[in-house]
Amino acid sequence: MERTLIIIKPDGVQRSLVGEVIARFERRGLRIAGLKLMHISRALAEEHYAEHKGKPFYEGTVRYMTSAPVVVMVLEGPNAIQAARQTMGKTHPLEAAPGTIRGDFGLDIARNLVHGSDKPETAEREIALYFKPEELVSYQRVTDAWLSE
Ligand SMILES: Nc1ncnc2c1ncn2[C@@H]1O[C@H](COP(=O)(O)OP(=O)(O)OP(=O)(O)O)[C@@H](O)[C@H]1O
Ligand SMILES: [Mg+2]
Image 1: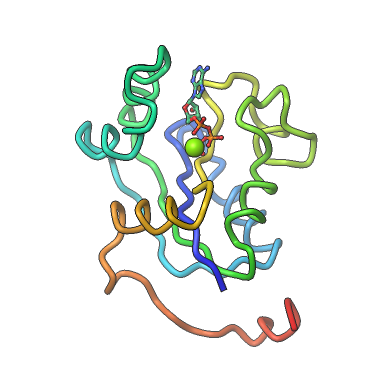
Image 2: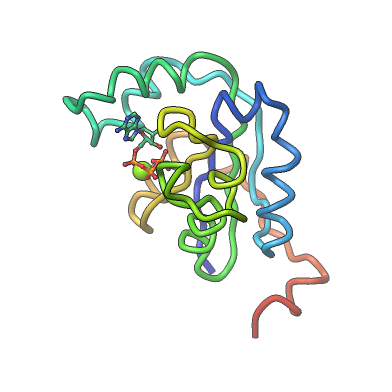
């Protein structure tokens, strides 16, 4: 069982794609362990994207992520990190396959709708940035037994 941090970025919320995006992850089989609407502060965005500090797109990305509310969630399931990133599609929507979130709804790398953690260490760090431990809920769904052995 693995956990990943997903963000529906400001463009996803503004374009009323919250339900559509969540539905795709749900249909994939991933289980929601935490979910909230929030407005990311400049300090939090800088911490989240610290690995990109100094790159040409860093400032624009921080401004984009703080420009309007986002929906953040923790999803869990077997190989949740890889499964979620596959459902999202490649970073640039023009390279993302049709059928993925970015491939179906995006055009511009700077407005690519969703964020997903890229590896287990990143997921752990990012989940801690957005959620207190008590905000995450552990439970089973009746369908979980039908999603993996
Ligand atoms: N060349 C670029 N021009 C503009 N924005 C960019 C560029 N490269 C990355 N970004 C923005 O910074 C984010 C982080 O880039 P990263 O390389 O981590 O891609 P990613 O892991 O696919 O995306 P994310 O971390 O948001 O899930 C991208 O999702 C995008 O919003
Ligand atoms: Mg990334």
